[in-house]
Image (cartoon, rainbow, N blue to C red; front, top):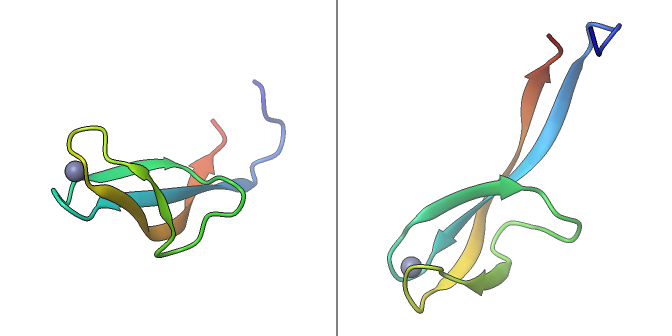
Amino acid sequence: MMFSKKEETREPYSVEQCDACKKETKRKFKDGDYVFKETSKCPSCEGLLRIVKVFGEIIKAK
Ligand SMILES: [Zn+2]
């Protein structure tokens, strides 16, 4: 077993949404991320990706 403790770990994630095609992408949180921040260009159109949600996902040690 890799984890000896049974604590829950939270992994932060950011959800980006494209202004144009509304496609949502979940990715790991990066330093400096905040909701409504414009991040990059959409990979499937020329729209602008914006962070719509930042949340912590519980990762249970197995
Ligand atoms: Zn798009």
